[in-house]
Length: 267
Image 1 (cartoon, rainbow, N blue to C red):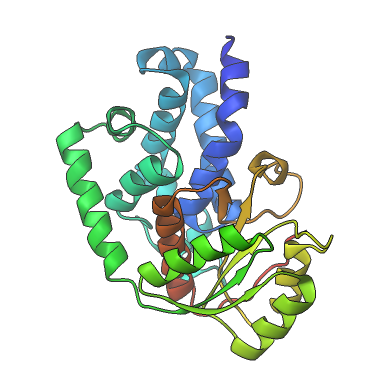
Image 2: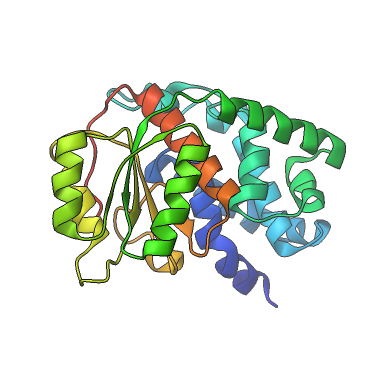
């Protein structure tokens, strides 16, 4: 497969990973753009890895670890979230956890992405697990119309030490529960069975209060086009419990550091 096709195949998911690390579409895409520029200068870099996907993520990691890139740009602009002003936003343990739990890399491939060995990667994963366990519990609103998926999410949320504020199956229920409970986290399906939109419900709630949101969809590539504001946190159906755990931790981490910044609606 030509390099351009290999990159295009994995690019939407690299952008998802970048946004999970930075907490914003703008900052994440800036790192991805820098990675693509580096790839143009050295196309053979992908050939040095176990696979083109590993090579692409490894190049991104090199850019991410670069103080020259990671320490300038958004950092000097006023009014940006606190996480964008930190030279190393996400601990390496979180990188390891996201690579395995969210991006689906094997331990061997994730270790190569990070330039380490499997034993060190496992140590980083254990560290990430301790961080996840230490997260502050919050109230979670679930917007999901499929009963079995909603039940799975309820059990998962409670297993992580959070409280379920309620389960909404329609736009109207989501607005009613959201405004009444004002949860600390929202897990939202994008398309609901009655034809209403989880996106619309969330955008309406964000006009009343600020809350981190994780969207769940069977077709993430449809929302990772770069042509409009996109969800910063996106989980693919069918999901794994570790994925929800990792992404929820990231969402709460950035919300805590951002200190109630204004939210942009998601088109």
